[in-house]
Length: 139
Image 1 (cartoon, rainbow, N blue to C red):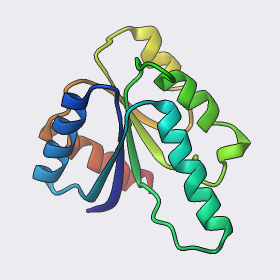
Image 2 (image 1 turned 90 degrees about the vertical axis):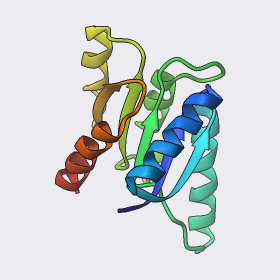
Image 3 (image 1 turned 120 degrees about the horizontal axis):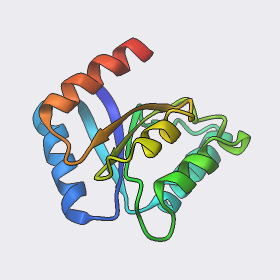
């Protein structure tokens, strides 16, 4: 079981479903959410600030990321998260969850070292079992 998972999606129903499926599967003790890439980056900036003040922080061990969101989409998030500014956290594994099935998106996702997989929405318990095995292998 993981301690913390971050789900990033602009759709509140998708976020609720994601949380329910993760809770049902007992994959994580805690699930937090962000509604776009900018919110997620702000979350990581705040964690870094706390860490620099020698405050104990609990980093997510896995991020589920949507690609198409207003304000800042998944691609922009990944571009920023992949910079040295986030080197303290960019080893966290990310699973891209998207309704797109474009092979170019899959290929592009594979260019980011933190992306563990690219899976179709909606999230299911069988997907989580699959992801759990990959997270265990990636550790």
